[in-house]
Image (cartoon, rainbow, N blue to C red):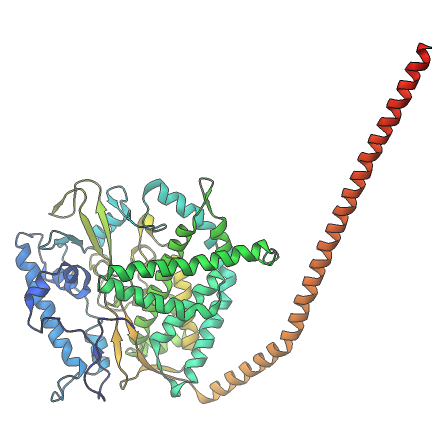
Length: 558
């Protein structure tokens, strides 16, 4: 369970409350908030309030502005606290539906002159679409280099490019497209499980986490039973980062490396035993065989790469699923429109990931390599610059009416939810398809997705975003449901009948392979024996010729 999330004291809330952590020093402790750079930098609401309040490029009163942001944030937290139902006498407590519409989907006013904000601690946060683009696309002036092994995101320049080229072969269309049916089956099975559980009253975020973890394991061709391990590790990693718990972060890093090393060593053992040679190569094989400048990647580098993959799937993809589900639940007309025409789904998902304020990608950091200027502030070399993806995706100079959901926006070139520039995620299209498959199965197998107002909704805290628990209600047509169940029973029966045949085929294949290997060994042994006899014959003939030659010379002398 992720820390920093406390439940309401009400044992039977009348509405679905959203758990909020109170300030450790009490509700009115402004000093704690104003002196905490982490709160000013990492809480999205604080950054967005700062951006909304900044209507000009004059940042002389930086301390006053930052303090005002902290106060506004504290007021917002106090107001939001009423949503937990802690005030029992308040009969006007907003419902969860109103919470989703008023708290999770507000959009900021993006002034053309509001380019960046320098906090009272001297750090720079960039908000506008143009300036975010400037920072993330200019890798020479804004470095991504990490003090820890981080492949490929924590690399710069030629080393970064070589690393991307080395692993690109693992994510080609030829390798990824055959995995799509597996992803679809995973999503379908999970939806079936939800429909059969508790009359459709389920945790939507559990579906998001399990789907994301299982498709990652399918991508790597690892045991699906590791899904809960990946989810637990991801949540603990989020908790450690949220609380700045460095000892725990180190333990998590070691635990992750041990998990990956065990899988890599297991694969090497299977290859050495000849158990893997007749199987098609998968992502794990490709990473083991990847080379940069003729050198193979180390296990530590592979573990780092898969860790980044895990954060992109089990964290970010799960967040996008968890955010999009309540948006569709609170916008039933859009939900039905997309369900009746699934061709609209890819565009709808891109627009939701842009629009929803609890986006999976909130901020990222770069370090200046030379003095630069963004807007008015002059930034020296070695300064940390944070870009705010969420505000960039709501820039009215780029997105017309950014507060509204609209089909037909230019997401391919303007939506920054998957990053941009040289460090744009290599699997951006894959991520979109994985998200699309999840919702295709969810919408096809249901007639309605709604919110469960009797459940407890728990949000994650930065650096994660989205939800830990998301109570939802899914419904389906009883007649269609019976047909689907009948078809599933037929499929299961066929699979049961085919299983022994497939096992016999596999055993026969192994016997044939063993026979071929035995024949090859016998052939090699015959060749070796023949070669030995041939060598002996040559030696014998040579000896005879030598003796005859010697006798001939002796006869001539006589």
